[in-house]
Image (tube, rainbow, N blue to C red; front, side, top):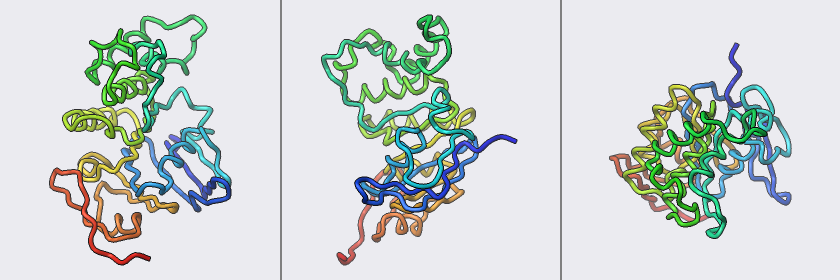
Length: 253
């Protein structure tokens, strides 16, 4: 029997005694395309870090592909939200893409021809191959985001985690990216943290609404009820191809 892609059981997490996540439960089968939605400060990035093994829960357990997240790091790809780098650090676009192969066997022998091929394919997918020799610090924010996406793809991941992947890229690349993620989803599980509601609703298979506690919906439909549960205030969802939200009038509490 195939293990779950992700299993989060009764997870609590606190920073300096302040609860960020409360009794979170989540079971994701392999092959899912999951969107994690919620307002700023709702714990989305923290949940992602727990599933990556970067931090450990205060209570509860997290399993990825049936194991501790740190045990399957070579089978996971990750694109962080913040891709700012030291602009004077002497590392090229190609070097960054190749870093996606560091978790794989044989690193003592250096990068192989296959590693180079995978890095080239990933950079071509995000239209950054022509910049392969350019220092990463000399790129724009959107270009850096593309390169970090390529780094994650170079790992040939079974699960790809992305934290606000379209935050710094142009609208044209947003559509290209989600089309590519849909293609990748035929062979890998995809988990995306995003505010891009109207775009995501056309691609995802399931939705988790998070605001310290989590509501899971085994459907691609993003309903008004789901948004109200996660955001704890009235939100009008407008999904006519334009990624925006309008807050209805509501009293402060």
